[in-house]
Image 1 (cartoon, one colour):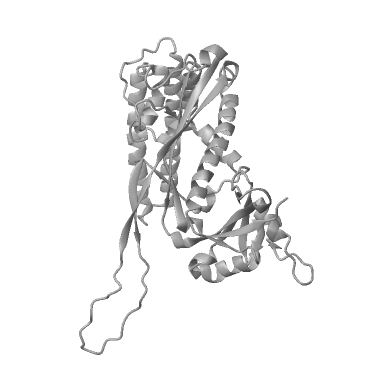
Image 2 (tube, one colour; image 1 turned 60 degrees about the vertical axis):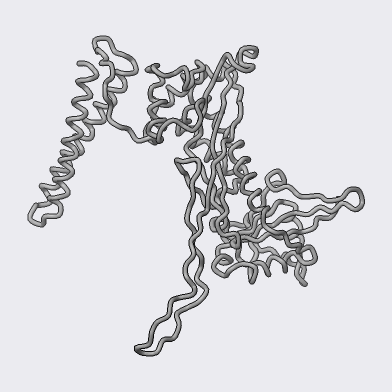
Length: 412
């Protein structure tokens, strides 16, 4: 039996499964069909699904190993596979690791059956990535590692809206909020046009290319796939979180700063009470670095009790008027020093509001990696150099959804 015959069986069985599911749905809606008959149909479908899984596993194993006696058929058509299924498959992981170890990229890998699935994933993702020298999409294993490590790196993206797009540029539509209500009209009187018409504005976005070069020792590249992916995941996690944080903070710092140095807690309360729309204030967060947090945490009431209160569910989270405080490192949100010497003044920003209404972080496609073991310094150092590329963009939507306040830090 060759690969074409196995594929024919998979196609035929797939048609039978779809027909059986359609009949089951039809019979389930018919009260005259006994439940015992429905159970028989369900059991038959379950049996066919198991048979399908066995056929697909056999097909993949035979294709990978080229078992003697099986004749591969050139150009064998395969069933379309979802991109996510590709990225999380063992087949994709092996092909990705093989490409890294052998310096295979999009330019020199076409026609190589061992990395065919890498090119298939690019097609499933909507065509080749932007640029003539892009890399391959990373396996889902690396994505999972990134998400796990992100939790300890002050990621701000969770506080903002996030959207994955397929085009590097585009726009979204945003409407205006009405200011007036309905007007009184006498019976049978003419109703005038509304002078408070809705206004729609285009909010453009543009994802720029972010890239880096990562050298990997050939010893690590030749190690098992899990070790290689774990290393890449940890590294790209740090780089991606840092990049996203920089872009989001840059957008936040376009807001006009107001000093609350004389009474920081009062300034934050005023921002929550009247600086933000009540609908925004209700879901607001307070973002600051550890220095600004320390200023607030030192404040006491008349009975020498801390003014900041811990979250009743999680004592490690502090709140102001019920809104959570997100304290990040100085590396994530740096202080600003003006002047020099004795006249130097250091301030720290606080951002108060709903980040999901303020801005959107756009991600175009996935993370791409390509490798070489002869270019750059790879030849001299007996290593493999990886080039990672991602495309990100940040667009502001409702600039009134966040306010910027500043506290003055004591010179140490």
